[in-house]
Each structure stands twice: as structure tokens, then as C-alpha cells.
Image (cartoon, rainbow, N blue to C red; front, top):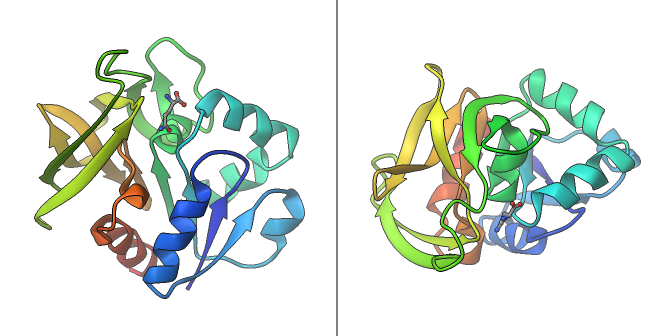
Length: 187
Ligand code: GLN
């Protein structure tokens, strides 16, 4: 199993460190030639979604990655990564439009820009969750499975082989969510 990590911007190194801990082979994706080698799953990290959107298009990675995900490549988007996967944004232009969710960017406002909590994740027990200028999911289609909520708001969901979290599991030392993604990618 080999996982490609989109490394245009944002918190990609932390995902690499997490996969390292889990003993999973991984490599960074920066340009088109990087995706000529085979890989079994993709991580889209947190960062700034508008910048990543722009860099995806400029690098020529947008179309081929979109085709691969559409064809069934398992993908895990965290925070900005979730924003990039969404079909709709509350007040913004969506990017990949591959997941039937509506996402609100910077949804917690300025005061609660960043916070930490713990919440149940898909029956796996309490998972530590770091939120940084985070979005949340305001609505989801019928094929979307809700995996975690915080204060009644959806912060993790899955549709087929697409997993998205509003929080950053790579910034904690809990491996449950990455493990869940790897199992999903294997399955
Ligand atoms: N607020 C950022 C955005 O809109 C996401 C923040 C993050 O990824 N930590 O892209």
C-alpha cells in the first residue's frame, strides 16, 4: 500500500509523519510527473483551500487527480482538503466537486478560530480533534455517512472511498483516523 500526499501547500509533512508511524509507504505529490507512479490512496492536507485550488490548476494536477478520485482512488481530505472535495461551498467556488456535502469555510468564526476537543469517531471511541480556522459540513446527501459530530455539527463524513474531516488528526498523536483511512483504502 502506497499513499500519495498532496504537497503543494499546508500541513502535508505531518501526514507523512503519521503514515511513517503506521509503517505505510508514502510520497509527496507536487507536480504531474509525481503521479506517474502507482499509488493506492491520496491525502489532501489542511492549509489554505483557495491557494491549494489555484496551485492544483497551475500544476496541471487538478484534472488527473479528479479523474483518479472519480475512478475510485481512495482519498482523505483534512480541513482545507475537505473544502476542496465538497460539491458546494457556503459562499465560495467549489474545487473538485466529488463529495455530496455542503461546507462552510472558517465556520467557527474568529473568536473560536482554533480549538481542541475530543469526540466519538464512528464507534472507534473518543478521538482528539484539533480545529484550525476549520470548516464544518452544513448538509450532506443521502450517500454520505456521518462519522463524527461536535456540538451537533458534522465534522467527519464518508462517501464511498472519500473520507473528509474538518479537524486535523495528523496534528495529534492518535492514529485512529489515519488507520480508518488505510483500512478503507485496503478494503
Ligand atoms: N480556513 C482554511 C481554508 O478555508 C482551512 C483551514 C485549515 O485547513 N486548517 O482553506
